[in-house]
Amino acid sequence: MGGLTVVQDPKECQVKTMTTAAMDITNVDKVLSTDEIIRFLKFLA
Image (cartoon, rainbow, N blue to C red; front, side):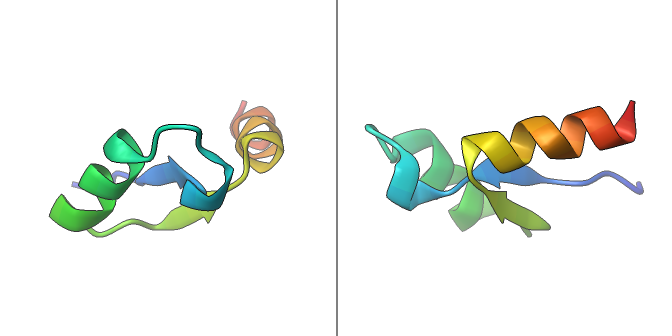
């Protein structure tokens, strides 16, 4: 429906469970570091 899936880079996570689960069940559009996610969200605003 035009959505976008962004997940935190698993290499950066202390607990990778949520990130890997999201990557397993959906098509992920972007895998970004925390800093990159912040910049991306600011860009969308």
